Length: 209
Image (cartoon, rainbow, N blue to C red; front, top):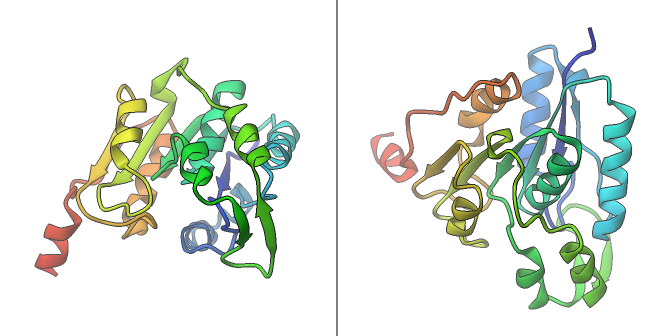
């Protein structure tokens, strides 16, 4: 039987070197499951990123694939999950990234790689082209979001995925604080189970530590 596969999809100007991506790979490696994770380096053009991800999905069509999308990666994951009928875990996902990025047109730099490029209206058009207005099966999504997200309004994701299982943690950040605490929930969801952490208030837990 083919091994399950997690495809981690990083966010805007990020890379496989991001904290969550590296932590998840290290976690899976320690569990003897390094061959069950792929973290591709995505091009900054949305259409090219989607093309690369579709190639990965098609090449592994004999495996049970779960997408893990962070921020802009959550937006990509939604479109891919709809097209291929996959499960997707969305971590502080972008819902309308074309609106957020419209105010950031111009030169951009990757946070982890020595790379600069021009963010253009064509980027926004490519994002609009993969927007999913409606979800065929909300149960295929697990939303993990924190109210302290300083980049995105978490309420947009809560509204869009209102019929999906979700964990809304008070406090936190866009990077998703204490990511390690939700990895068991991610693994359970990939198996068709919903097992969310009991702690939903990060500020409260920090006060107790």
